[in-house]
Image (cartoon, rainbow, N blue to C red; front, side, top):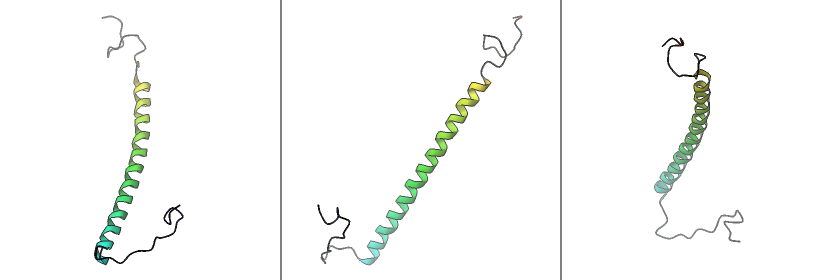
Length: 79
């Protein structure tokens, strides 16, 4: 297993391509923002799925409310 797979930080090489402190901070901020966004999306999807179930129940409860087999709005059988 590699050092990262074991949970250890690999030794960092000091090369000119390493990001500056400001760039590293921006990257960390982006990671935090993306993480929050994913969490909010997950929460909103959970809420959305619950409201879908409620709307199905509402449709079922309101269907056929006039006690006859046809789906006309009026409930008299003298058409």
